[in-house]
Length: 474
Ligand SMILES: [Fe+2]
Image (tube, rainbow, N blue to C red; front, top):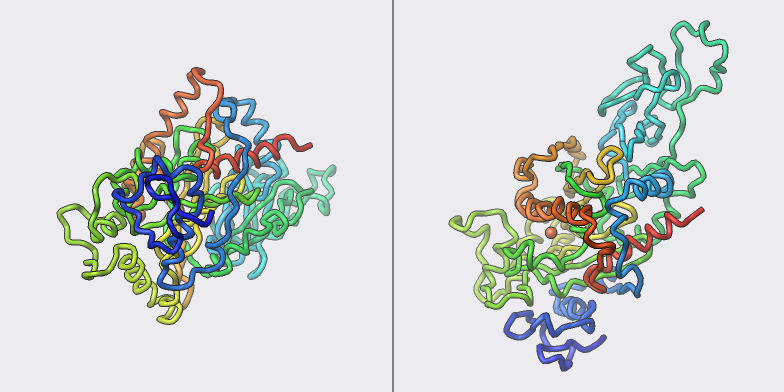
């Protein structure tokens, strides 16, 4: 995989500059030989050394090239997922800064089960089943701050650490041993500034579950970010279907054609690492799909939220490539938070490219400075609706800014109502426009299986390989 095929399919020397233009490369002839090779060659031209993590390559082998439609449409399959996955897997519940003070709490709901995440001490986060042990009322419906966890129904109260505090008219509960009436505990731990929970008391530690993932984020510790934006929206489709729309760049040509002048969709590198996978898509250069040659200015303009009749956010200097200009602009924008030395040391890849991880089953943190995190969950306990969330995690200097609360959009709301997401809102609208039509198509029973592109949809195949492993466990 050292040589880069040109349009005719014959190899060119790897030291030849990668100038991905429609004139010199035809994606239809690239084929499997390009798996990661063109992206790696692009890194060779970076104006700074790129961190090792960009050089790691782990293409997925065969497997899960087709999966049964019932994985998206069957209530029975959903119930298997609840029992075998959601009740057993480590899952991201919130950011640590969502509950900064002792007594802060936040309900995290998954497939009809509610978990209460509580900061019990300045450095301790714990979690409990969000339910009163008396009659089963949900203890807390909203995030808040409290000195105790008191049920609104009859007033039975627990301490923040889950130990029983008070039963009104306790004389009336002769059958209750007050030393054995704690809130049912749920495992909780943290990584990267995120709180994770696990409903399975027998599950191994979070660090064991995450495995090598933290090694991918050592250059950009996510605990040093703050949640600047948090928006969620209900979608009319299965939770896997929704996240799969964000796990490949194959759909860009048809769904987001406006991005093609500035996005190397077809030379995306995809890697599978077992319980997590990633895609790295370069930006600031044109897609090989384009049949016209954009200017360097057009290559950067697609990355900014502006109308066509507005002036460019910045003007690409004469003689500077679009990719270089985009990187320089983004490095300059990070100086005020990272300092001049650190900001100027960042490679073009770190500031330009989209490095998107997918951690089983539903957690999608982006690497480097693209700041995005996605999470996808079933909506309530439904197999045919889900909640998609997008967080923007920004670096900061000085005191930690407060975390943005979740802004929730309903199933019929438009993403553009979440103006704080900027350009992403219209891209998301394009993405989610497909999804109910896919769900309806699958529900129609016309096909028994869906088929996945072997390379460009390898992140999705990796998800299904891991899902297969979990649902067939004892
Ligand atoms: Fe998309």
